[in-house]
Length: 78
Image 1 (cartoon, rainbow, N blue to C red):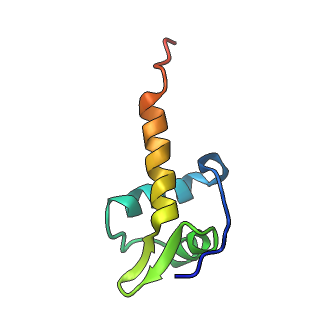
Image 2: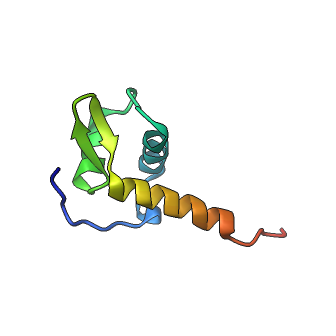
């Protein structure tokens, strides 16, 4: 696995990139657009695997950290 050393925050990703990472975190995502997959690899959040592009440890940690932060955030009384 080739690490790029790139660190990116969740809010720096496009909605499309965020959605793709969430779906990849749940399991195989064969519908992933190849260009988007390559972008996630370049960002250090995914990797090429024998069955296609998959989320890597860094991407998984970003998704899980974001989901946990949202769960722990105080509810908005708007």
